[in-house]
Image 1 (cartoon, one colour):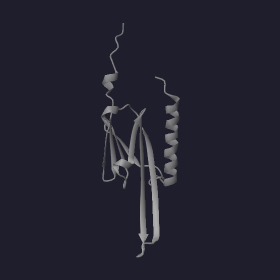
Image 2 (cartoon, rainbow, N blue to C red):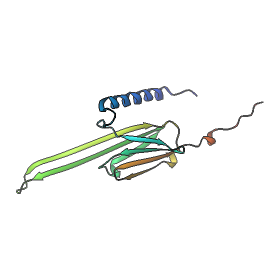
Image 3 (cartoon, rainbow, N blue to C red):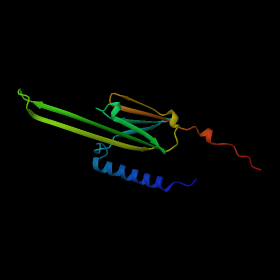
Image 4 (cartoon, helix red, strand yellow):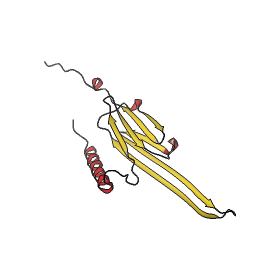
Amino acid sequence: MRRNPFDEIEEVLDRVSRQVEEGMTGGGLQVPGSVPVDVADTGEEYVVTADLPGYDTDDIDLTLAEGTLRLEAHRAGETETTDESGRYLRRERTRQSVNRRVRLPDPVDEESVSAGYENGVLTVRLPKVSGGESSREIDIE
């Protein structure tokens, strides 16, 4: 089976991105705008876990397309400090956006994907497509 050249380019870009992140952060700190993720292969499914403290479920968008899980999260906040007369001493508005793409090594059953968010941790379960369904025995004549 011939691979799509865009898949190869995406793999190279993902590798370079990981190397840059590790080089800039010493391997342990988060690059601004990126979400730290864990990807586990349980044999039957992939489990992607992402730390998103302070976000609400409405702030998080998940998309699965062509074997890539895309996670985007956006939030805005405002804090203000006033004196007794109600004048601002300080008022701050913040916006934060983070995102991450995870390329999955094998096809997944898109209809069975599920996600949960609890205590600032997003967990996405992506069941693998059963290999038995796409294979068949070939008779030799």
